[in-house]
Image (cartoon, rainbow, N blue to C red; front, top):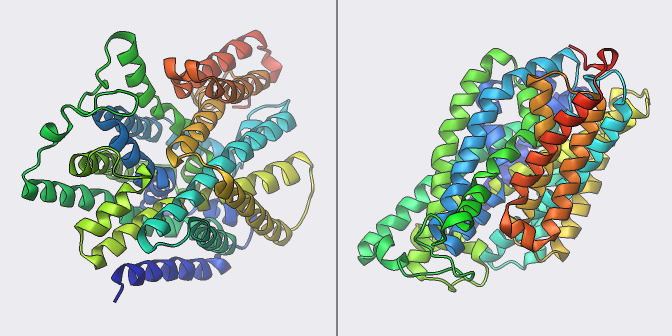
Length: 483
C-alpha cells in the first residue's frame, strides 16, 4: 500500500472540501478579497506565514543551503528579521489606515491617501503586481511539478498541471475565506515538516557516525565558496556583500501585497499582538529547519548527488522516514506551494477587478458581477502562470528572489514612509514605484552588478530615496496625502 499517495490524496481532498464549504461565505467582493475583515488572529497568523513562505522555503532554501552551506544562514536570519519588523511596524497601522479609507487592496490604499494622481498610482501598482506575481506564481507551479516528480515519478509537466488545477479551483470557489482557512492547515503541516525532517536527518548522521564539521570542512560550492564558512571563505568587501545579500531578504516583506492583505483582513487591530506572537514563533524554527535540511543533505550525500538540488527535501523525506509520515511531510511541500500560489492568484484578481475595473475606470457594477469576474480572472492568470512554469528553466529560488526584490522595492519603501512619515506626495509615490521596478529589472540583468551587491538591497534603498526626495521636491500643502 502506498501510504505516501494516500496521504497526498487525503490532503488534496481536504482543501477541496474547504473550497466548497467557503463558497457561500462570499456575498460580495470584499468577502472574496479580504474575508470581510473578520478573520480571527490564529487564522491570520498562519495564513500570513503559510502564504509568505512558498515552495521556496521547502524546496528553494534547502537547495541553496545544499549548494552553499552555512552561508545561507544569513538568508534565514534576514527573513526572520523582516517578519519581526513588519509585524511590529507595519501590521497595526495598515489595518487601521486601510479601514479608514475603505481599501481592500494595496493599490487602492496607496491611491486613496492622495487627492491627485489616484488613477496613475492604481494603474502602475496593478501593473507591477501582475508582472512580478506571474513569475512568483509560476515558481509555485514549478514546485508542484518537482515534488510530484520526485515523490511519485509523475512527469514534471503533468505535476504542474495537477497542482495548477487544484489551486485555481479552490481559490476560484472560496476566495479569501478558502485561502485563509487552507493556509491554517498548510502552515501547521509546513512547520511540522521543517522541524521533523532535520531532526530525522541528524539522527541518521549520528547513527552513521558522521559529523557536519567533518564532512563539510573542506567542501566547496560550484563557485568555489567554502560550505562550512559563514562568509563562504571570503574576506573584506566580498564577504560583506555576501552577508548583505542574505540579510536583504528582510526588505522584501514590507512590499508583498499578498502578505499585507492579511493585516487588512484581521477582525480588529487589537488582535495583531496575538497574531504577531504566533507568526514569529512559527518563523524561527521554520527557517532554521529549512536551512538545516540542505546542510544535512550535503553532509549525508556530498555535492553533486542531486541532478536538481531543489528535490533534496522530498528525497530525504522518502528515504529517512516511515512512508506514512513522509506522505504527510511531502504534503507540507505541496502546502507551501499552494498557500502562496492561491494568495497570488487572489491578489492579481483583486487588483484587476477592484483597482482597475471598479476604481480606475469607474465601472459601477453589482457585487455578483464583480465576484464572477474575479473568478474568471483567477482562471486566466492561473493558466498564464502555468505556461511560464512549463517553459521556464530557472530554479524556484531564482524566480522567487526576482519577484521578491521587485515587489519589495516597488511597494515597501512607499508603504513604510506613507504610514510613518505621512508627507509622501502622489509624485513621490509614483517615483518610488517606478524606481523600484526599473532598478530590479535592470540590475538583475547585469550579472556583475548583482554579484557585487544584491538587487534586493540596491532596489529598496534607491526606491526609498526616490519616494523621499521626490516628495520633498513636490511638497504642496493642498496635495499632501489625506490624514
